Image 1: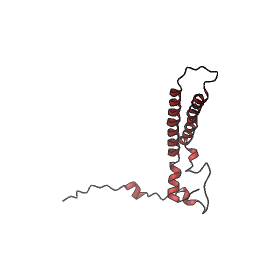
Image 2 (image 1 turned 90 degrees about the horizontal axis):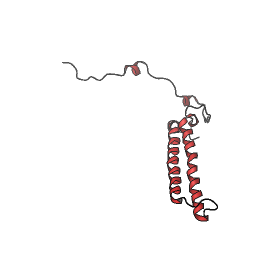
Image 3 (image 1 turned 60 degrees about the vertical axis):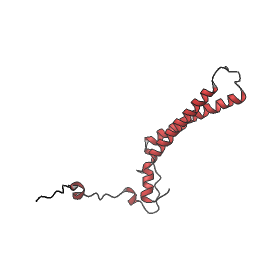
Image 4 (image 1 turned 45 degrees about the vertical axis):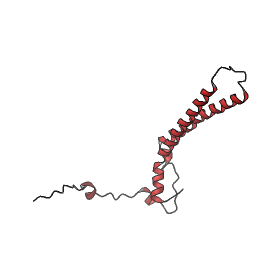
Length: 125
């Protein structure tokens, strides 16, 4: 009677196990890698830089909100007095919130390898 267990072993990992050390295993005790070239560096990830750009762009929405708040408090000045301040304030809020959330999300995503490095090594530099 033949066996009904058809489990197949992973021959590649059993025949050729991965003994390659992790880079942080070769660090000298007390060394804190802060360089751009570290493999866990967040500065080499484009999502970190795009996220920071979106975060800085969200300041335009905050500027629109400040401009409209000043217009409401101090009047139109010498400019035209026919535009809808509520609509512009809502546009500023939407720009600030959407770009700010996207920026923070991309920065969080770009720092995932650093968080993994901290969890593996216990280092908090």
